[in-house]
Length: 599
Image 1 (tube, rainbow, N blue to C red):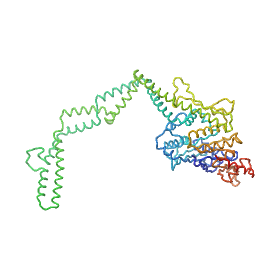
Image 2 (tube, rainbow, N blue to C red):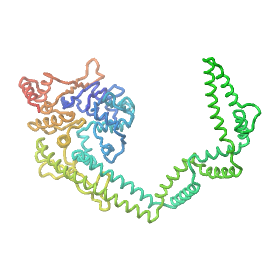
Image 3 (cartoon, rainbow, N blue to C red):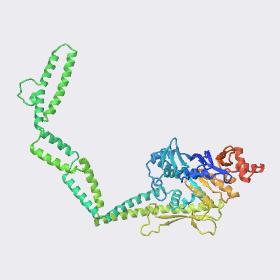
Image 4 (cartoon, one colour):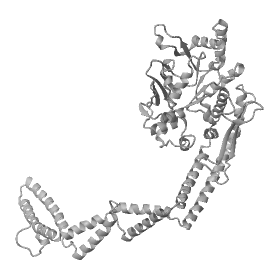
């Protein structure tokens, strides 16, 4: 939820800080006081266009920052898997990964290199009077599109300039899927669709092959055959080079090993050797001499040490004796050199024989794709038909879930509209098979989804965005969000409504406020309103006041202040909204209205 909104030098607002309630917050004030600047601040930190004209007169820059508090579940979700910012025409991949709302925002922030700090995300934007702007996420500069993607998961604005988003078919599909709760069906379809798309891509490559591709196939085939004929083994070339080195230095090795063994144990090189004593014999003689001493202590200890040394010498003698007569012949050397040369030809482009073998395995797979024989194409086309049938079956299951949810959504929204001063208005959510005979499947199923709105009885049924005023569309969106909340439970998002009360009064205004309060039980709601019957339902109320120029500092011009009202101060504001005055009668009416505005 939006925990705090800070503003500096934005239009007539020199400095303001708002801490909305977790439930419903009302923004009120006289017409022209500057309530729209709050929405401007939200749009700014949401990656909206930066307009230097919005910078306060005399200021170098405007600045806005939104601090969002995140649920523990949303913060934990950043470690549950990686996501990507790609997506279809709706602009997001997170619906595919199962992440929505705050969880998706955390994932996108993580992808941008920023993680929540103490369960909070900081989004800020600076706009210079020169027109340049800077977007900052958690203290790190990011493209403003990143702010837009993250804020789009955390804040949903229903205002006159924001309603056209729901007119997009992709947005309507996303909304219907959210209400339908068809995540499992959609995930199953996407898995089948991805497999089908991969096969289509493979077939397309095969069918579009030219001579260069066939030449590449010939090259791969010859290279694979050559490697297979040579049959290299990992590390074989290094072992052969070591053997060659021994053969080439056989004389030196024989002389050195023989001399060493003669010194250590002459019997290893000449059983009849009698001249001189070897090291082993001398040490054995020393041990015998020390053991002959009958006095204990150091003599026995030194004898033990010499015996240990003699045991090590025995191991050395044995190891050296195994090296005698193992140097190979000239014929062996010729064979080894020939094999090393053969292996060397394979490693001219690959560092090691292991890399050669890895290249061969990959080349064999690539060769399959380059093999555009009629038999191969026919085989893949058969596989493609199987994948297509599976995707079509999954699409039918998904369509059934959408059709059922669409009928329920349309009926329930129509019922809500009757309580929002829109008698005779209705919504039909139409799910129809895509009109594409050759291939009706797309990334999100086979359905065309349309939200068709009838603003009053007898009016033609038209697509949303083309059949309602700003106020009507805001109330329609309120009805949609109410039904979604009742169906799917709470949403970890902030809903902002502007102009939702346009053309509403009396009992309908009370019902409007009541429904906003009802939505606020499952999500944070902020409403900009001029109706006391709506504001009275809020858990917190902020008043935007326009102050005339200060005589001591006329350069500042008109200044707008924002302050929270509580207790009697709020009673006076509600009274002003009711009658434009603060008489005792209007104050009593305000107190009564506040008392009655409880769910």
